[in-house]
Amino acid sequence: MGRELSSDYAEYVRRTALRLPTVGIDIGGTKIAAGVVDGEGRILEQLRTETPHKSKSPKVVEDVITELVLALADRHDVHAVGIGAAGFVDAQRARVLFAPHLSWRNEPLQEALSDRLGLPVIVENDANAAAWAEWRFGAGAGEEHLVMVNLGTGIGGAIVHGGRLERGRYGMAGEFGHMTVVPGGHRCPCGNRGCWEQYSSGNALVREARELAAAESPVAQPLLDRVEGDVASITGPLVTEAAQEGDPCAVELLQEIGQWLGLGLANLAAALDPGRFVIGGGVSAAGELLLRPAREAYRRNLTGRGFRPEAEIFEAELGNTAGLIGAADLARGRARRFRTVKRARVERAERVSRTGVGRRRTQWWTPLER
Ligand SMILES: [Zn+2]
Image (cartoon, rainbow, N blue to C red; front, side):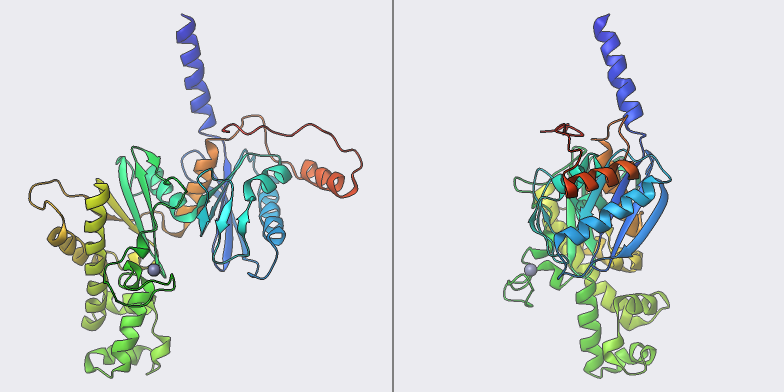
């Protein structure tokens, strides 16, 4: 009898906790986006601002995040904050070890922000956050063994294993872009040669297109006409657009990126054996022009081909809001029902911390998972 009651209570808490609105923040190279996200993954309101320059101190970025959260909290109940950031986040989801676009080096972001806001805060790698969103609400729904691969300027990735994010021992899992696929191949900013992202990414697409155009190959003439002969103006979206309008050269360029994608996915399948791959990032806007050659190359390179079920390869559904939605949803797991962020309280606490007047010794909240 008692057990029944307590399990009813657990169910009650789970049901109610999952619906609390939380804020997700996506810190990109140029923009910071913040949104209030409900329990069904819908964005109720979204704000954007410029990312402070790399030379600014970590405190400046915290100020920007705090102001975005407070602005949203003026109009919504906000029970927790999730932050998705490019870079290395430690396995406790508390510190940003390294962020390429910011001055963060071993930055204790979770502690700093949860102290200021008086709310639970989690920090997550942006690719992990995006994969979580696709698994909960997008192209990964219903498949518990999922690998997400984002083709942006490079390749980001994440693993959902048994319905949980697999972060690895040190929080570094999913850096698929730097697996060597061509020993001695193209130089990569990571210091190695022949990394996967040098062959299958937005940067790779642009490099190949410009090389072809610069070689004055007649097949690249329609591409060159689009940029009035200015090779440096050729971009990934431009190649995708040309391919969608039937330019055979652009179709071929995407095909090549897709083939490299398929080869890398076959390698990932050998290691991880997922049921589904979800392909996101800017290049995935090419849709089937990219995915069809990827599926073919995947099948050709898959270990045990013909004797095993093959993972599906889907295009991501949530686009560039995935990171924000995923970060918010991950934070929801730590939300506390009766705690919301209030501007007046935060401002009072900041006055106290500056002047020392009225300092209290109690902590506002206790971390749920320690
Ligand atoms: Zn690399």
